[in-house]
Length: 372
Ligand code: NAD
Image 1 (tube, rainbow, N blue to C red):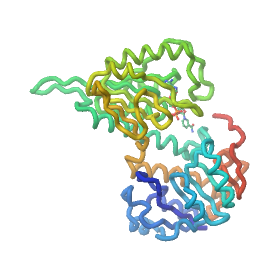
Image 2 (cartoon, helix red, strand yellow):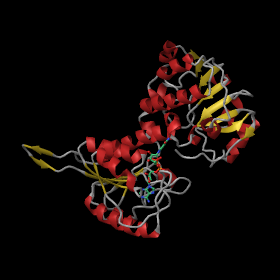
Image 3 (cartoon, rainbow, N blue to C red):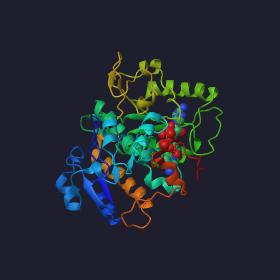
Image 4 (tube, helix red, strand yellow):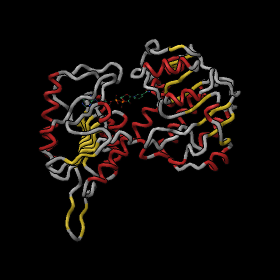
């Protein structure tokens, strides 16, 4: 069968679902690979590089298995061949109408954002791959907007203190931000309602700030909504930290809910001029009062609030490489014979969970998966 790698149509999207390096393992699975001309241009991969890796350049939408980053538009759905498979980010929980439109086209759809968070599926988890890149890039954006060094220095012209960075939420993105900020030489602190992350924070060079309040423990490694008691104590911590730190990076999310509000406008007003906040939850409503999704805002007291929602796309070559590798791992699972025949096994928990439309029928939501 033929795998098609199509160009992204959303303005500002720079990623692509396969790179020349991920074309080779797709060929190894027995597929023919066709890449739409120009699909990799914005990530720095020319048509020639794909051709050298063994791909054809041409009609990728007509393929048996179409690989894509973002959900398809109505026009793009119409380009899918009946009976084909589509593998992309879909947001199935938020987009029931998209699932219906795809089902009406009589295709099979694997949603990359529905990969269950179990150890066996980690190699296919694009959300984690992208969160890791975004966390790193959040620090780069903050460093760029901050008019000073992150590292401390003693020079002939005087002593420069290190920047102080607070990371709120120490999941995948937060840990990447902690690692990046400490490697730039900043003093890094981090907080998270899951106390089990303290060791990971320290191993990346950060100091773990515990919130002194009762909070129901997580049973599955994911945060629950925090208690009123926790939120009160955390608000005090943020208010005190806002006066002290130069940079705040917030990454707090609770699956299936709007982003928790961590910093109020009063906290931001207490920050020093020149300070920077990167709100990585801006697309989910924001952790910080005053951030605007997709934009940079400078407050009256000279604090830069960054609400970019495309942080992973700002490192397109790496993002595409990791995204493409996650896709290869998923296709390896769905090509059991390594014979170029795409065959989803509905009895496998991972494949069941990601299959949101199967041969024209909506199969979302899947039965719950026990977290391991
Ligand atoms: P996430 O994106 O859902 O949330 C980000 C962080 O925000 C979490 O650490 C969460 O605890 C924190 N948070 C929530 N409410 C907060 C609040 N009020 N204040 C401060 N922080 C708050 O989480 P994530 O990064 O996707 O992952 C969370 C955990 O799951 C990590 O331990 C990660 O290693 C694990 N994980 C496992 C797999 C897998 O096994 N396949 C995949 C992804 C993540």
